[in-house]
Image (cartoon, rainbow, N blue to C red; front, side):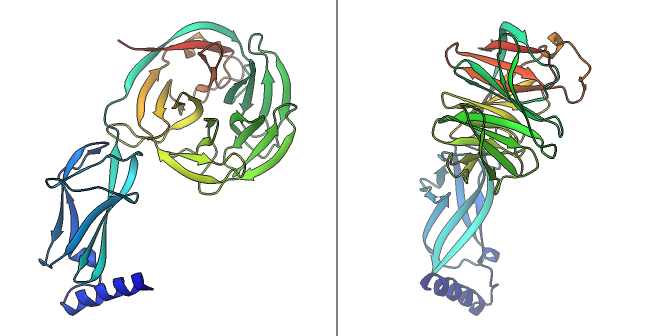
Length: 347
């Protein structure tokens, strides 16, 4: 009630001075730079159109105060993307808040990586690959398209499908991840996912999406699940309730990027297929900064185009890290090969 009274009192004060009921008509936040990057120092000022006396001015982003030193704030935020910069101050004894939408970008450009093929293995060209994951040297795969979506257990060396579970014809299978003896699987636009017992692939339960738009890719860090949804957001899911507990936004030093598809987590980084591109992003799992881009150009040319091939859709998709071999396995939709690769920094 005290806060409501304070805001109401401030509005009455402005009206009494012949001003607008909206404090932002009198004040605005001004920044020295338009392009803002993590850890950057940037000049800041509060424009005061009517020279109204103010006191106790502070700036915040994500409830973190950004102290002003020599007229500058330091944008040392742990996460990047779309943010709201808030100025809080007093006019007489009335609390006022002014807000400004900003975009906080990565501090540096992504590094460029390439790949080295270690080996190639047979892969079912009828599989419209949406998700890959290793568990105890066995490959698990999710495939898509309505009427053809499956969850599979695969011998990666021979390409033999050991277990094949058809999904309901109404859903489009998407990404998977395995954590705590459970396999989690998404569907694309149906708004639901599934949890299976990894020992026999029997379904344990369904779960439903909340704020995330669609189901694209999944991975996990051993404690939480990461979920991409076709936007710039990668959501955090509680592995028990599957509730969304927050998100990061994927950004470069120049823009916010929204094409993260199939995901894999390795040592604090999220490796994400770029939707419909022959490339993969390396994303910092804490900040959302896109730290690297892997160019997989030429890999598609090593695949035989079978009867299921669709030039527009048979693209690179599917990434799995083999923890014992320390290599990545990648394939694509309707590809007849699965490639084991090493990621190399480009000179």
